Amino acid sequence: MSSNLLNSIGLGDLDIAYIFIGLIAFIFILFIIIIVSLVKQSKLKKRYEAFMIGKDAQSMEKEISNLFSDIDYLKKSVDKNAKEIRHIYKRLETTYQKLGIVKYDAFQQMGGKLSFSLVLLNENNDGFVLNSVHSSEGCYSYTKEVKDGNCEISMGEEEAKALRMAMREG
Image (cartoon, rainbow, N blue to C red; front, side, top):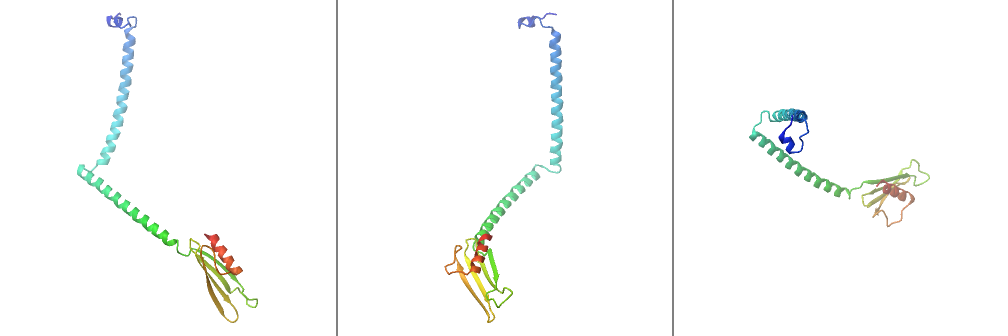
């Protein structure tokens, strides 16, 4: 079967049956694409209907508005907590957080290591040494100031050891 149209576009030798088979295959592929699209649309519609159950446009607007106000409240709370945490950290810098203690016998006649050197330091290694010496006549306590990990007054062996312990703790 010969077609003038096919001859005019240069396809006069082509059998028209091939064109029909091609068109049928193309229609079949389009049909499958339409079915897949309808299935996806159906699933989306079911999800939308499940989301919108019992809600109209005004109630949805109110829900969204409430969510935004909750988000604003949470942002303000986070900012407030961040400020409070900064304040706490600032205060912690000056609190005593490092400790060193050495117990010892100040005199040979005393036993039980009743004497001690206690060092308390803050984050900047500022603080004090508390030394308590126990003897058979009584108990004597004194302190020495520590600035930046150093003491201007000479320190005994036990005091220096307690200071090193406290410095290592930081």
